[in-house]
Amino acid sequence: MCGVVGAAGRIGPDTIDTVIRMNDAQAHRGPDGEGTWSSGPGEGFQVALGHRRLAIIDLSPAGAQPMHDPETGCVLVFNGEIYNYRALRDELAARGDRFRSTSDTEVILRAYAAWGLQAVPRFRGIFAFALWDPRIRALHLVRDPMGIKPLYWTVRGRTVYFASELRALLAGGAERRLDPSGVASFLWHGFVRGPQTIIDGIRLLPAASHITLTGDALAPEPVVYWRLPAASEGRISAEELTETLRDTVRMQLISDVPLGVFLSGGVDSSAVAALAAEVAGGSVKTFNIGFDEPELDESRYAAQVARALGTEHRALRVSEDDFRAQLPQALDAIDQPTFDAINTYLVSRAVRHAGMTVALAGTGGDELFGGYRSFVDLPRAARVPALPAVVGTAVHAVAGAVTVGALAVGQVPPQTRWGKLADVITSGGNLVELYQSAYALFSSQLYQRLAAPVAARARLRHGLTEGQLAETRALTDGQHPLHTVSLLELGSFIRERLLRDTDTASMAVSLEARVPLLDHVVIETVAGLRQEERFFPLGRKELLKRAALGRLDRSIFDRPKSGFVLPIDAWCRRGLRDGMDEVFHDEALCGRAGVDFRATVAIWRSFQAGRPGIYWSRVWAIFVLLHWCARQGASL
Image (cartoon, rainbow, N blue to C red):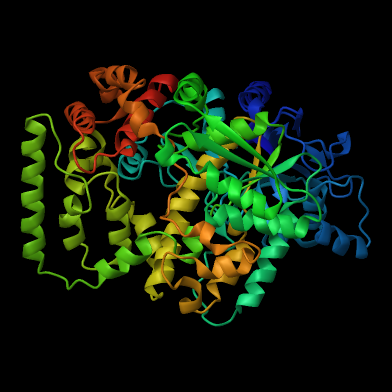
């Protein structure tokens, strides 16, 4: 787990200086070592590579990067882990390959030498890497199937620059001009859907894809090598699922540094902890974060699970004072604006300070096994008969008039599900549109007002560009409704928000976060289960419990579902209120960030007044955007 940077194309001394500056901007991603390498300045197609190392496997200098393959001349910078590297190493050794290290990095180089880019689908892991092949004078940029490790890139003149973080590209001189489409996407979702980013001209390499840069192709189209799977019902048994989960967790426990498991006490994290305890053959360390607010503190459930599993458990606490003290660093850790990285930052920081370098998390269980209300509500809403277009138009017009009237008096209409009724009615029962409306921060009428400075230029439909909408419809077309919701959760909420937030927040404190339930082989295995066995009874995740929690008393989990949520709602009304109030009333900053000032103030006032549906996430999202733009000096 590390940070990578580089440049390809026309390389001069100033380019190499830029790569070094970008590498320094990612020092937090790799405190254990650094390195740069260049093919040399020249007019032809050249490369410069940089790396920051967080040593996890093979801590010796033999695992340092950039890593050079003496047989092929290829050079690699790699961020992530290849969990099946030992099996691949054995296969390559049987072919006659010899290794100088015990690192997974060298396995990538030798696998590429043996199979070219066809090696990539054989990797099970989390990775983003750049591989220079001097034999064909080409640079390959590659990203893992679920997009767990990010890779951003931009073209300036005849040179391509790339990095693990967008801010590294800004440190390298990328223009700090906001992309109207990125801002509009953020105001819809609370995060920016890729491949767009918040900055104009910087793009995120899509998950499960690679591009090859040459002197003739500095901005090629990505090649997709894996897709979220369609359902293949009945191909996989429950026993096969259990074995796949065990094997996956076993692989992800490989580490030469201290490793622990995030344990909230819920089904998903408990499943990972239980599997880890089962296959580890020794004591497993687990960690939990508790709060002073009893309604959000689930530490007692985590302790109950830890006792049942016999783990070495440590309960950590975060108070409001702790949060306020850490907030500046947490906000500075955000690479792109997002409303949901703060909790991961606080957990990661606490676990890192407890001595861990690697932590496993239970991310993905709800999305794979139907744990969210979306699996109940969206298919039900899709069955509502479609109304004539004229009715939808009239409802939208009324909702728009209500929004205008509310803003005129400094308030906003309710943003509950009933407040989004007009959007539901006009969806025509389409699950993609229903999902986009359900997960939007605001109703489309309020969004149009808030995003007025950018909406016309962004031209989004249901919060998506035409390309994103077409891709999402192609992914879900013809699928069972419950599998469709799962694909939407995995493709949007997981890939575009949760995993990106996890990478940024954990790497800000030099912690590697692993997510076994989102291994692409696990996802393929789950897609092969019978729908009834996989999902029903809805919301219970009974199959995951049977597969992983056989040692535990099921009554531990007989309680209302509660995700890991910080008490930010209460904190925004108390200690953070004055600082947030100042930001929301900065009209010039709102203008630079692309949000409507009057709508911004109305949303903030409505939150303070306790208006229905104006949850903390709504105001926090706008606050993070404004703070990020001010901190980075970015504007339209």
